[in-house]
Length: 120
Length: 283
Image (cartoon, rainbow over all chains, first blue to last red; front, side, top):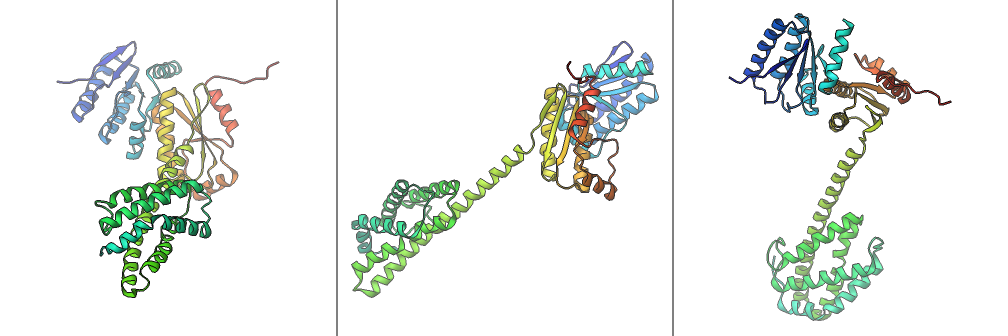
């Protein structure tokens, strides 16, 4: 079965979405990520969606949910590299993802996570 | 539509030169074709008359779609397009063709003046032909004008949304004019694209040039700011004039979580501070 790889980098988890997301894949990712956070006691999750050029409300909600789940398990979520078209679509759908941190690219996202960790 | 009698066709063909001279004289006396060069106009009249005579030889123009008349149609379409672009008005364009009526009538009167019935009948047919041509010209002229206006509107839309780079990682968008849905869309797209292209962390939207802010405009601003945040950049709104600030409060608009500044300088100072830069006096 198709899966999205979850990479571990120190105390952070790195997820790079490089295929078209369909609903089942999103649900699998959600479950896998929750398991991995618990297994590795990660403090931060970085989701790179720069290759994602289409979203629907389901995927939008998935991002929200992942962030919520991670927060309960004491991990920060940062979404990086959102494409303009995706951002506009989400805004038009009314999904403003409150509480989800964002950054322009992976490097800035990592820095953001590190500062958060340092502060905590 | 009936065809012209061959006698009339012959008369038109034989007196072709005279017709052109009379027509040119009329044009010169009646209209002020300021936008058109005399030589160019003369050339177009000659061409028009040539095609006209060729057309009448073949028969009635009908809808101008077929046969001998199609070349005339192309000629008229090109002419009205060019004139529309040059800014000649519709009246002058129509007058160009209608003014042919008088010289033709003078000619027919001289040739067939003593056969009243035949003269009137032929005059009517010629007049109908010219009407068809003029009608087609005007409708093409109108279409060309509309195309020009549409293109200008699009250009205006593009022109009015320049995204400027103020500093490394700081973009500014001076908004000028009323914000409607279509413009917001264009503005949002170009700003977001620039943010991706330049990897800028802060975008400043300056609304000093926006004449009024109502609920709709505020909603558009909110959308843009949210989209920018989703991309991972920050947004500052600057240039909030006192009246605008009052309007926003009176309307009870909630600009939740949006950083606003009174002018662009303050916004830039804040942006520089956020990126860890400071500006000092060189001494």
